[in-house]
Length: 271
Image 1: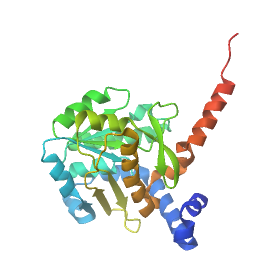
Image 2 (image 1 turned 180 degrees about the horizontal axis):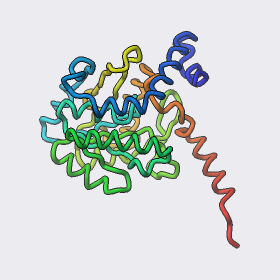
Image 3 (image 1 turned 90 degrees about the horizontal axis):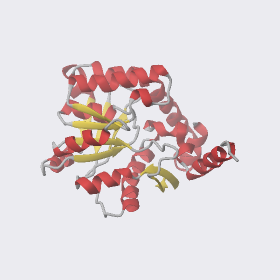
């Protein structure tokens, strides 16, 4: 990770800052399991008002007052359930679009912890999950009509997904799912990006940021770039908070082309 942080930020940050970013990145990664339990078990009056700060909720409230739902694209920043998990504690109706824990290509313990994170929020507050390939559309369309907020993770470039489009991210082409624009156009919902940063000197403290509404043009590639650019800014400001570095190469078009060629070369051919 030190190498990639140096490549991306070394010229502007310096070696000592890069070391700090690398150290904080690994702190966030290694605390994933503990932080999941922290998010879903501690009570509001014990920690919420004391440790969590929100910025931009006035933008979200203004959009919701128009009796539309809101679409909030985000990244794994700094935890996949941080944004929906913390917003529900403020009383918002949140629907998270995600891969079902049992469908994730991760070790069993990670599946179980992810399931605990989702179920914890769903049992205690107004959180619903719309699971990919498990009836997601019916869930999120209903919730948007009920003035809910759909939180969608965009930094999951699944190989072979037809909706992947290359846009500029951190100074080079990177693949993101463009299907989010179809939902935006169909529903007419306002679009805000959202992310969460954690204080690595005091892991209990977090800041949730919701942007002003983004202007959509109706051109899918241009609008996807607008969304990614807003999240790009957050990654550049807080690189230690973004999960995606460990799999960064998988989002590049070159990786997908190489993998596609490899699969084609190893596929059995029948005469």
